[in-house]
Length: 72
Image (cartoon, rainbow, N blue to C red; front, side, top):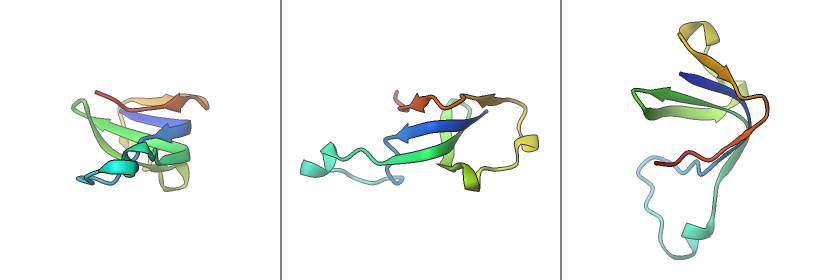
């Protein structure tokens, strides 16, 4: 699944980044983003300018400018 046209994608820390102390209070954000989900897990994310080809996906959801905070 590919989510596109995300206004603000919050909490986009680098993979395996360990956060400590004041770094826990920093919430990295990407504006105008996409989010790729595969088998229930986040596979990739980034700015819409780097979005994969939509035709490569069975399901594409245009979230029309909503903000997303991935969580478990």
